[in-house]
Image (tube, rainbow, N blue to C red; front, side):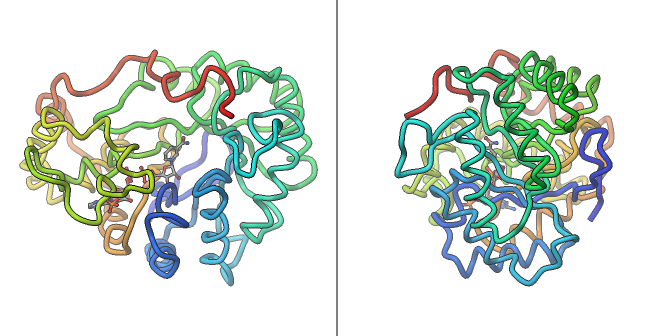
Length: 336
Ligand code: NDP
């Protein structure tokens, strides 16, 4: 495993980080979830990402159990707050002081830890003054419940405003967690340059486009049984954007490039996001340990410039680059 600093902080994280959205507490049985976490640890992954809302709090609990007995100082555990977890009252959502200060305690208890290394705003809350949110985060940090603060799917302007307030409060906002992959590059024009200027690192989600970039979904064919595209607990809905024959055919054109580099397609996809020097980690998911074993081999891989060009030619116009799509993943009002 290779390690990178998270933004300009002193915190090192494994450049391949393990996340449990849609899997733990949902698609994947608990014993397989534990095997995946142990496969990640065996491969040298030290950084784990979850959220209170994943599987409506169950994902945090499964991860907490799977990490039991590990040396806490040797792990970096990240979680998030924003989305509602049920049963929900009017304040069980968003980034108000009340929701943040209540949610962190629930997360720590489920994760069986005294602190998280990174506490992330899972989305921007248009209904809470940013000053209130940042003050609440500062209080979480000062209480020793989180070491650093991060955000997820915030626009460049929102990141700049949050970073400025955090600095005034003497806390470190060091990370942004956006979607980023060969197929989804909307952070490149605005979020990445702003974050480079401010010393913020990207922890990028769905680098394999939820499995699509592994090449296992063939155009014109039904999805393989047991894959996310067949997961009726939520996965099938989430992956739908990429499940059309135009995208799937273009993705197949990456196979010869991966072969020449002696990489699997999933490894190529993970290695590709890591070529961006503002990326601190590729945040991968797995429904079985073999995927973890395969994907970690992308650590430390350098893709030659000529192959980077051929990748772009192969994908052509199925790549989404519009920076306005950053906000597309963020609700304009709080969800209920
Ligand atoms: P990936 O793009 O890594 O997709 C992971 C899924 O792809 C696996 O569960 C598996 O699904 C399939 N897969 C992985 N490796 C392989 C392989 N080698 N061969 C074939 N199939 C493979 O990322 P995720 O979409 O899972 O997201 C990763 C993490 O990012 C999450 O766990 C979460 O921590 C974070 N995230 C954050 C969000 C945010 O808003 N901040 C939003 C979404 C994710 P299967 O076997 O079922 O087909």
